Length: 152
Image (tube, rainbow, N blue to C red; front, top):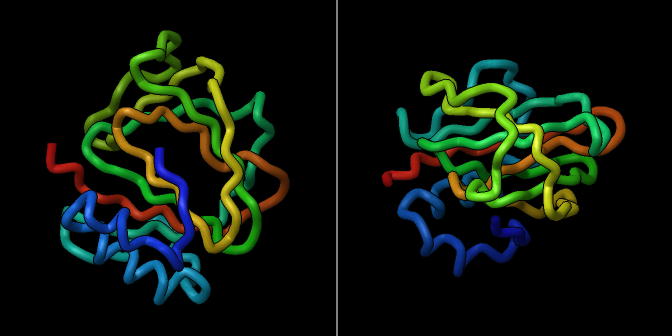
């Protein structure tokens, strides 16, 4: 997991060939992006897209860990703080919902080993090695989750 500021992504952009496009789009659109519902904003067909959503946040003890295999997530809270739990996937033991390749997601009930706080204007990059419990907090949060094809 990598945490940083949208205003300072130069070194992170070198880690994946699509990160530059993702961060350029985020810097240009994060503050003004409208809720797109279930329809993603496609940036590069099948390789890079953004989900703009307003989910209801949950308490730490209610949220479960999730894992992806095909895509890296870039989480960006837009209008309020989001807390996210973290646990390396190598430490996962308690499957709640087995991996679904069509949705690229699995869920686990293990407890996170750490929590990070992500402010508006910041991001969290989550790779397939990072089990994460997003959307922890109170109330509703406007957020963007950019999905980046792993390529590995």
